Image 1: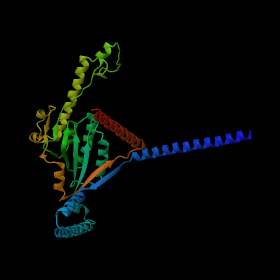
Image 2 (image 1 turned 90 degrees about the horizontal axis):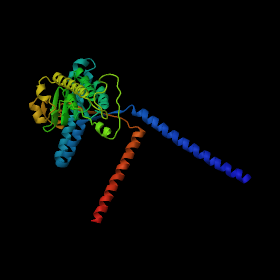
Image 3 (image 1 turned 180 degrees about the vertical axis):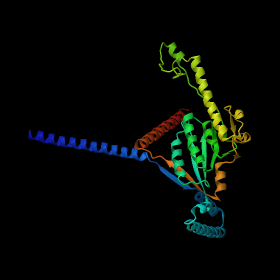
Image 4 (image 1 turned 90 degrees about the vertical axis):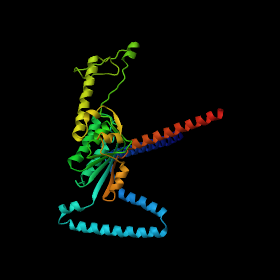
Length: 360
């Protein structure tokens, strides 16, 4: 009996120890998850001084190309130039103490570079909002904002919000330049037309001033298989077209009417911000390459963003501003799982290919 109680007590102690250990692990994971969630609510603004990157690139090339004597002489000249610029900046800063407003115009121009890579839902609009809010805290009318825009368009309300964020820059009287290197179509062009100046690569896709909506309808398939699907609404046009219900000519006509209204709003928006465009000629839903878009005054100049920024680097300080959203623990675990599945999938495909080659 004593042996039984001793063994039972030992078993009980081990069980309690295991349960407590599990609880500690669970509590620890929950605490990390909560902290990650709180941190994810506040991302970080990252700023890169592009002039310094250009200088480093140039220095690397000079070091590789020039002989020692030439490189040493060039370095000496660069140091002399940097000292002169630092001395001038120090004198200007001292002078500003009494004449801040007058001397503000004397300082070197700043260019803030933002990036927007748009999808159908304009998912990056939240990052764009944070970046613009940050820039507007410091930017002045003598500065400039450059947006490197890439988007094939998407949902009307999402891109309407993205365009509204860009309007904040215009209301502050800060020059806005939008560079289109690949595509700015539909909602992407709605954003672009807010710029004081639109630069486009020669073969970038621009335009698509139109509205589209498409959806499948499975009503006949359901009816063929004796499956009923009911759509109950309150309000004559609460639902015009459905995926599973039977669509009517009246509902279809109302849906087309709403598309036309949206198109008219789009055309009006473009006309307000680019009055030089013959809107009825370009609002056909067509797209054009950059060189064609220039002829139709949809863009102002043919130039890539890289060329433009390198041109500006001599006379302005250029800063890339990027808002980085922190990832939660769940996001990191999901990303890790996706990567693991991807690796397993491609490894299996590779093995399958090896097997097929062997059987040949």
